[in-house]
Image 1 (cartoon, rainbow, N blue to C red):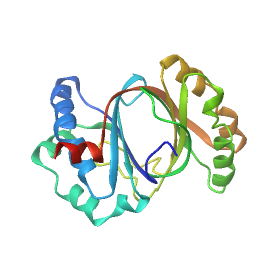
Image 2: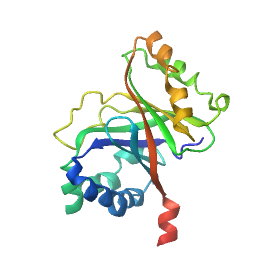
Image 3: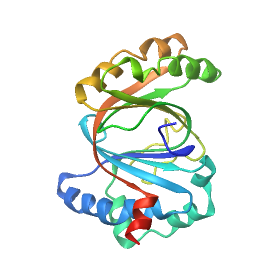
Image 4: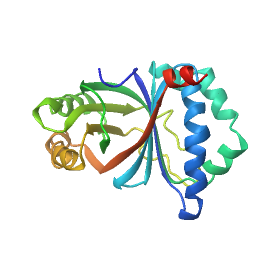
Length: 224
């Protein structure tokens, strides 16, 4: 399975241009390191939009889904640094998904990520999952490395800022890892439309992100 672990925290947000320099320094010098250091967190990846909204995206993989409601993670949320509180207050249009990784196919992760946000219809979850995963055949398309499905837990997927809405807390995300923008564009454009439509669910948004950098637990251990 190309994605590490069984749980994933997805966060995405905009920030005002006047705050971006400090926001990016905070993310790169403090925030990702703090999160990956939490017991049960395995790795984190940061992205910036190529053609997507919100502008910034981060993915955090955890050993199990239960890590995302663990005492260690709750302690981290309740004890943010002053720098963290300052930057979190600047988030705009935030999306926060606390999710299970329910399917992951292929080999490796790429420099380009396609992201689709899907809103399941109650009672159609199994049919939607089956229809989406049936289209996970990364080996059939040049430049595509792996494809993944993550499913939010609606009780835990709450934004951290009052600017954001809890609507869509039960949404799912399809992640498509590729080596080029062109390959990812071809892989997500229309690929999942029939799967969503045939189950009376809704495709909310899609976009393409470029990888900024990634950090693993092993990186922290080597640096320590």
